[in-house]
Image 1 (spheres, rainbow over the protein chains, first blue to last red):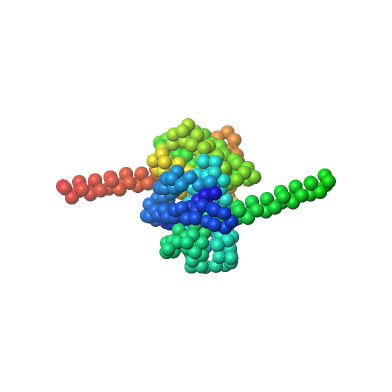
Image 2: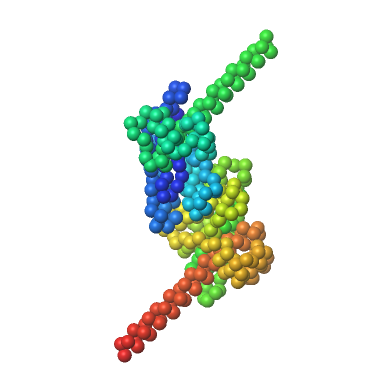
Length: 179
Length: 179
């Protein structure tokens, strides 16, 4: 299972690709940041991000896309760009028929650090450790994109484990009733 | 000069096409609304809007796109969808090399009614009158899209008139200096 995580933005959009192994094992495939200058028109910046993201998707062929959910609670002007940017991975997923999910910042932090209130430094430190990287991914947007992908992978794995347990329990009950 | 106006949204996205004539003359070409059910995933709704907008652009071949600017001052959840939806016409414009501009709700209202604080009913009434329509365009999103296109057309015309006047004045001064 390979997941491409996106920390959406126009000035800096973090993109990270990870692959799940057995249990909670997870491997770094690629990480980077797509930047576009604030002096360019928004429309051109959105198209540039779309073109770059398509290159990542073609190259790394993920099984799913995970995007950090944006909330309008900070700077309105920059939030608008972030929200517009978040449409790009959603569109890409729909066009390619890939599953896509939004993850809240709290659930991403909780998944990698154990606390929904962890700061950026803690998230970066845990991502570096989880992926056994020699140095911390920079900038923070790159580390965040990896954290989002890891969160998606582990939540999916947890959901699968729960579904497996539920299925086993149902089978056990059916067998008991049949007896 | 033909302008396609967009009142962005996922549940209802208004689209209106108008064409400018001499002075402030303006002609209705087409108007409609793209709807998508809130029960569908956001990614699918964005892709549907993109597909529909592309059909409009192919069919009506506008010279410019005008989009209503969204502000994050009302309902956060619905504003997120509106902002994501506003990325679609921007992307389309960048992809097709068409000029695109955002217009604030205040400037759109002021352009068609003379007051930046006009209500929806006034905007609809003025759009109906300006375009000599037999009945008011419905829903309000359709009327808004036409208002945005008209605003763009008239602002462009006013800018052109100012530029023409400035050019004429410069020519007059150069002639006076040369004499």
